[in-house]
Image 1 (cartoon, rainbow, N blue to C red):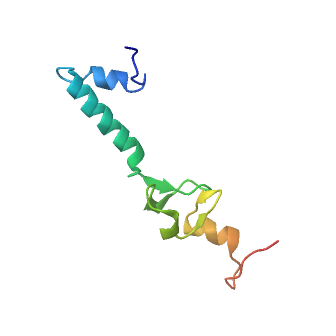
Image 2: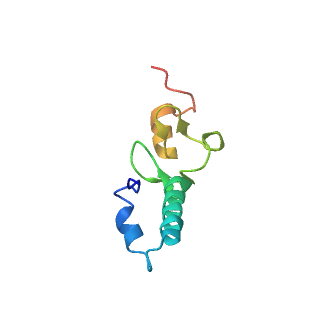
Image 3: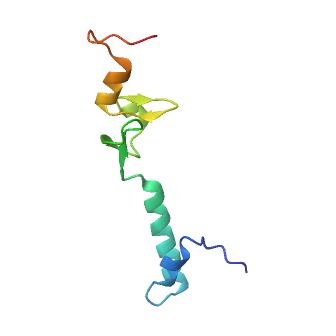
Length: 91
């Protein structure tokens, strides 16, 4: 049977105590869950600062999210879309 383990995961899986098939499967699942869980804080796509949202927070529940671009912090949102009177900059 061909080796289907990702080259990224292989060193982690091989380092498991006992290195049994069950250990490999369990560790692979844990690693993949962490990769897709999105528990990390999302950063502003403009300045790179942390935002108050986790990566797995749905975009409908966020403020300052720009479809097609990503999450902005409040400061970058205000600089990009707001004038002093709160209106949008439209050109």
